[in-house]
Image 1: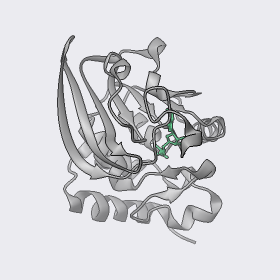
Image 2 (image 1 turned 135 degrees about the horizontal axis):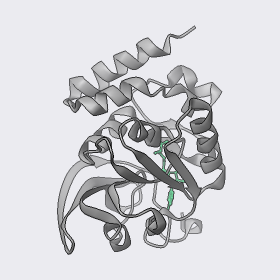
Image 3 (image 1 turned 60 degrees about the vertical axis):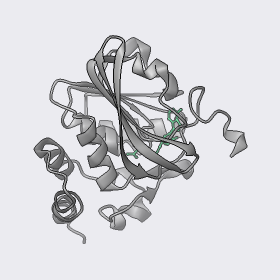
Length: 220
Ligand code: SAH
């Protein structure tokens, strides 16, 4: 029987800390949130592998390093309200909810949103709201957010999402002109009408499909 907690500790040391991730809040959250409940039974043995894994509906749970890196770039802190676009398995939302006050997460695929909701309930996360919909339009009723994290890659940062950031809020999103290769971009709302944009790591996420993303799914 695999000892998941030992595997999780090793993941934090070898995949995160050894690669330069040092934010104690992020390392602590990654060390506390189990990854195995977020993958299917046949994938549990690989839950702490150093890569993405397939989940339902042809989607993926991101590599642990990438989840930690995005949370670090978004500077998620206690008390924050966070929006995630692309709930997928729910794993990244759970990691962020281990730090922030409240996480709002959206997936366009109803089945994934329902599975994620069930996992949050059974694991006792009571500070995560999940809904089905097009996350490229944000979650206006819950805005403003201290952080917005997109877990799927689009052609550009939608203005509507920038508009849902609090002053001082950070948005982290994979942006790229091609469907499967992007660069992580961090946009900080420094003043009401002033945004700072920084380009960070090269990454490969699944496509963000929506009104302000890659448009029609049928094209891919
Ligand atoms: N954060 C997830 C990774 C999800 S993969 C995890 O930890 O498991 C990316 C997800 O983005 C997929 O589930 C996909 O359905 C979703 N997605 C793609 N476009 C979207 C959109 N416009 N709105 C909401 N979700 C979207």
